[in-house]
Amino acid sequence: MIVYDRFHIMQKLNWAVDMVRKEELRKARADENNELVELINCRQRFILLKNKSKLTPRQADYLQKLCEINGDVLNCLEKY
Image 1: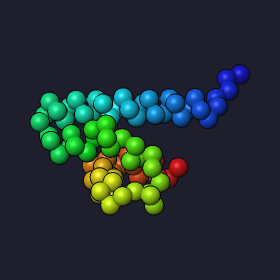
Image 2 (image 1 turned 180 degrees about the horizontal axis):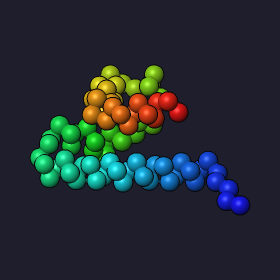
Image 3 (image 1 turned 120 degrees about the vertical axis):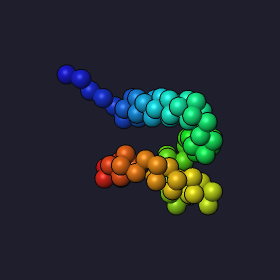
Image 4 (image 1 turned 30 degrees about the horizontal axis):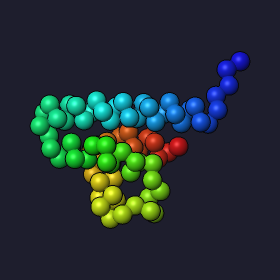
């Protein structure tokens, strides 16, 4: 029997999200898409984990732009 605990599930999930973010950042830099680079750089990565009510106005703006770019993915996540 395989048993997963919350810590290790979250660790794997965070690792996967970080790998995808880094890959998308590489693609955006290669395409010279500065707006997208600004949205997905390291300073913004914890916005997804932060409680929406505690976001600063600037962070809320970044989150809104990320939702517009990744609408299908984020809408799927909100269901869970």
